[in-house]
Amino acid sequence: MAVLAVTAVLSVAVGAKSISPSVVLDALLHYRPTDDDHLVVHTMRLPRTAVGLLVGAALGVAGTVMQGITRNALADPGLLGINAGAALLLVVGISVFGVTSLTGYVWFGFAGAAATAVVVYAIGALGRDRATPVKLALSGAAVSAALASVTTAILLSDSDAFDRLRLWQVGSLAGRDAALIGQALPFLLAGAVLAIPCGRLMNALALGDDVARGLGQSVGTARALGAACVVVLCGTATALAGPVAFVGLTVPHIARAITGPDYRWILPYSAVLAPALLLAADVLGRVVARPAEIQVGIVTAVIGAPVFVALVRRRDLVEL
Image 1 (cartoon, helix red, strand yellow):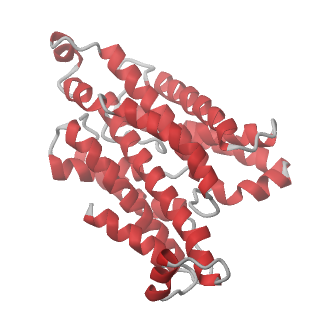
Image 2: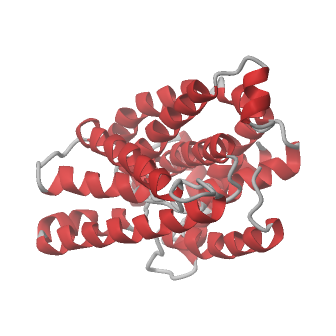
Image 3: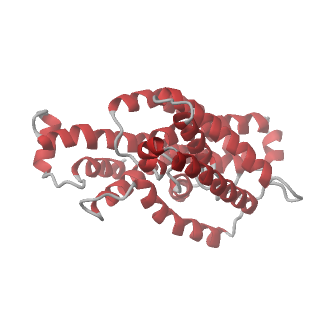
C-alpha cells in the first residue's frame, strides 16, 4: 500500500508541465478554476491517476486469474490476445456503428475479449499436447498480430476514428474525465465481485484437475467463473485506457514471490501492485521526453518485454 500511495502522489504531482508541490497541494485543498495550474491538477492529473488505479487493478487481477485457471505462467490478457480482441471490436463499435459512450462500446469490448479467448484457446488446444503454455503463447501472439492488422486497417480507412483513437490504441491514461470513470466503475466492481471466490477455486486447480475434482471442485464451473471475470475486467480496462500489455503478466509473479502460492493472497497483492506499476510507468512516460509524453502502453511494453524473456528462460515454461 505504501508503494501504491507513493506512485499515486507522484502521478498527481509530476507531469510534463512543472508544477511545484506547494501549488499541487494548494490545488487539492483550495481549488481555483481560474488558476491554470489548478486546472491541470484537477482536470488532467487527478482523473489520469484515478484511471491508472482502476485499470491497473483490473489488469493485475485479470492476469492473476488467467494464470490460475490455465495454470500457465505466461498467461496475460495482452500476450494471449484478449486486449487485442477487445480493442478490435471497440474500434468497430466506434467507427462502424458510431457508438460514443463507454456504456455503449464496453459491450463491444466484452464481446471481443470473449471471442478472442475462445479462438486462442481453441488454436492452442490443437494437437496431442493440448493447450500447453508454449502453444497458448504462440497462438495468442499470432491472433494478436492478425487482430492488430485489422484494427489498423479500419483506423487508416476512417480518418476521424483514427484521430480519436490514435493515442488510445497504444494504451493511454490521458484525456479521460470523471464521467468516463463513473461509467466504467460499475463494470469494474462487477469484475471484482467475480474475482472474490476465484482465489479459493484457483488453489484447488493448482493441485491438478483430478485432485480438484476429488476435493469436490467443479473444474468447468471454476474456469467459467474465472473466464467471466477476465472478460469483464479486460473488456472494461481496454475500453477505458486502450490495450495495455504486460501488466497482467508481470505483477502476478511479483505478488507470488511476496506471498507464496496461495491465490487468496496473490489476488489482493496483484490488485495493489499492478496500479502502482502502471502509475509509475505513466509518470516515467511524462518526464523522459518533456515537453512531449510517451504513452503508458509503450512504457509498459518496454518494461514488460524483458520480464517476459526472463520468465521464459527461468521457468522453462513450466505450468503453475
